[in-house]
Image (cartoon, rainbow, N blue to C red; front, side, top):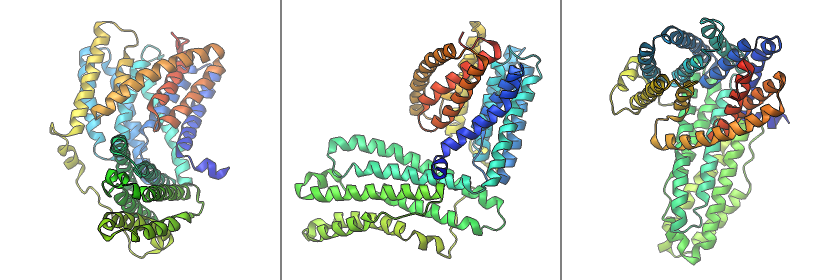
Length: 489
């Protein structure tokens, strides 16, 4: 049971966020101060979304930055909101600034996103607040409450964050290997679909490597004695080498698969890749649960069987097959000798960005840089949305801005995908939320709806965006029903 609990980092994250929101909101709601409880919960939600992957010492600095940026962001909205044209200028300028600050490093990325989110939350709660000063107090306080709970848990298990990041990398590699196994055997038509999927999985794999490297560097910066960090560095280097071998172009698969004599061989290579995928998944389980890694015994048998088959082929047809088997055998041996790798004396070194913060900021200040272009696009969306809200007197038009924040992504393809998923998820969330609110019309029922929806939102946030949207929409319905009794309306 304990192993199952630790195996799923997204569930742990969701549970941590939900518990903090419950601790902040339930006492106030039950004592008749729903506004204070729900606003604190919204601050905790934003704090969880803004949380950075950092060593405990770095997490303290990030939490201080988060709370301060939330105070400034919320207070700025309260000050500038009465003057629409001044507010529009401030909204555009602060959005560009926060997005560029987010490009300075992992520690700033989440904080800058959270600051923009808090500004829009403040706009949404403008008509419900008892006094102008409450939101700049309660929203940062909610983020602080979540941050303190998260820090306490991190200090109890200080290496857990690094283990989770490494495990995500090995799970991403496992998914990549499983997809690549479908190439053996395959025809030219199937390969188009498989290669497209492999390209997507490879991007996810590279992103996982980058995130893990940033976490490793944050731990390296915080530790005086890096002895305990060395095994994690070696696991990372192993992950990198396994990915490089898996991503290499082995052979023209349609030519190999097209030869009837190669059918058994191709099936064998496919099984070899599937077993390697299983091995990397077991290694992820080892990192998450502490269960000893057991190398699949079938891997050695498959390698020997393939080698025997290749040796029986004419020498002219062996080269491509032998190179392919050699590549995959190296991965098999690296995993088989995992214990030896962990005990080697050398200490791996990771590449790091040695530029100052000012140099990193200047590097973004040209139109070709994708982060500047994203910042300009997003701020333009905000200004147009705010202009439409003012011109057409749209009630709750702040939702235009909030939707723009979540849908507008740095890449066109990701933005287009999120647009459809946001529409689908919102419709489904409204339908399900209205139904549940009718079934649970009491205050306690709506509080339970809000917290359960928040839990499942965090579980699905990294996996399926449209499902996460369903639950965050239900969360909003429950929250606004508790705030004003008008969530459904």
